[in-house]
Length: 263
Image (cartoon, rainbow, N blue to C red; front, top):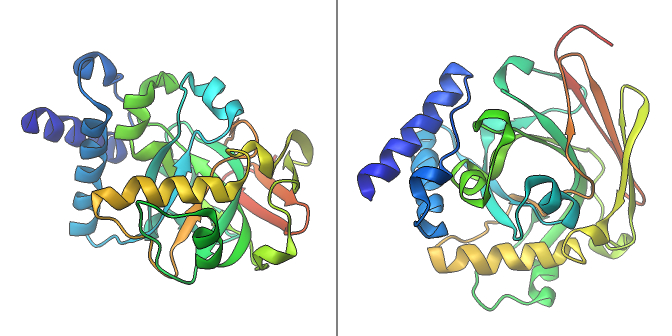
């Protein structure tokens, strides 16, 4: 199995380099447990770190029913966020670094204390959050035509692509994460709406799930790291030249600008 894990990781790493997606992995690993998919993802993270990238946080994927229905899965997953994935708000984001990008509006938790499961409670998770920001996550799939099952998206680092953080930090006590509504505009057109409660009932629940899932793997969520708990809406396809704005009640807005001809 170790050889198969390495081969799958190399195929996904090759997709990043060539910008050419690969066929789904699920048929090759039909009888493999989900832990094997995480081994494939971790092998890629190790390769990135060897080449100078660093882990700056984690994301919870497929945390809302809307996203699970869109992807055809029935459970969340997680991925790693590395330094190279973070892009400045309003600064042009290289469109050529993505294969088939989509965008999602999210909260971004910035941790002030370490958090390690198992056994993490909502109270402990809330106490570990220093502040929260509005965020846009660019998801991308190295799997052809987004034909992913849960094994594929886990192996593909939870379809991680890029992150844009807003610049107005807020305390958890200043916003009701469950009731905070979100409007997602692409090129000035309202494309989707949602609320924080779509994310496992509360985005804090997603943070708890993440800490308790990665803890047994020996992973601690570190101070200063960013955690994306999941999208408040369905994922929306984006193209070069698109300008995307997410406005979250109580948190303000965040803007992502894709490099290319303005539309």
